[in-house]
Image (cartoon, rainbow, N blue to C red; front, side, top):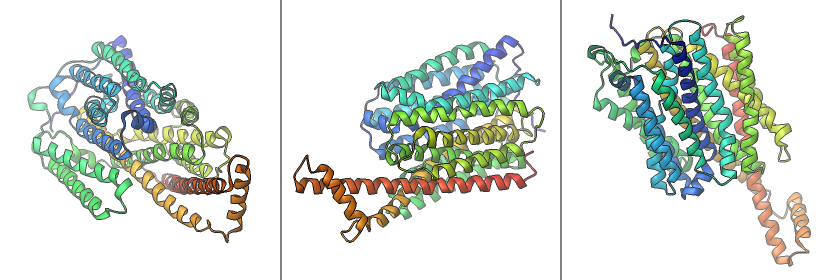
Length: 519
């Protein structure tokens, strides 16, 4: 039997408390920075002068660096120890965040985000693995609570903080918030994390070629996904070729690891042979796909289709997502008495279906509080029920081996980065496609033979008559109608997307109701 690395436990109760705070803040940073940068994409582009294509490349570069960094996390920890690894990662992350705060150009921001990815991409993985530094006891569950608390806090408050910063024209505060939290994490890490390293014969092994293969494969995949939002219909063959090349490189990487002699830096063969782990990874993939797509579609829906301000969209999204705290508290009360996970999965996917259904019922005259807020609340219920339950079930059979557990967390978060990018691409492509279809149909109604078009044009011209001459009023009326058609096309496209979400939720609930494995 191969021996694996086992880090000494953190025995002191005081150090364990500091470790809980460290875990909470590490997870919060991860979801805060991802949420804020996603929600504030448009203002950041305006501040730095980036085009959507350039911002897309920034996203690809960060995700690519993140996946590679996560894959090497355990390999580095085995050579530096937890304390040195965490202090170094935080310093790199702070450097990148400060550079982002000072960047006002595309190239500066791109380089800064790459630095941030090198330092902070593995924060979430590290936070969850740190639970295993606590001796087996009920206090480990407190560590899981700290990890989950950081997750739900980051998800809930990211839109509000982003909206607050941009509304007050203080873009740099997005990064300074992260810097302050990172400095606090550094302080707690200094006194709570061990610094021992395993013997050389127990360390995992890697090869530069495999890492280069993973980097190239991931970049090709993410670049193809990101570019598909702009060039999918015009350069389909090129994008598919790049995507297949990336898939081939990733496939060869994983096959090479399975055949690796000694201790591979990712123990994939052990993980893949575990059925519970693989089912959990699929559920994680679905959650991150939905999260990426929802984060892309929601701002377009609320701002461009319904006409609400950017600040209002962020504020009410945060208020709606506060249900994740209530849901988590409810789970905490129910789980000790009724630990079966099936009910949480079924209710979670039904909440996703209800979220999609309620969003399809929204009209151009919708009220954010009465119509949109309840749907956002249901989205929060889905995220916490399905993601938290999956987290508890996926690693149950591998958590006794610290190395295998750590590698499992790395694989899960690598999949998360990839699926978030896939979700963003899917949401954008669907909206782009369906908007074009609806616009083409509605545009056929813009002719003088259509009575509704004639009536609407006359009403608008009458409203403008007192301000301009007949030629100007006619031009203004035509512009208004064209703008209205574009808005309605986007609204209908978003409704189509939410029907997909509704169907996905119903399908997920049906499958989880029938399954008997993830108990």
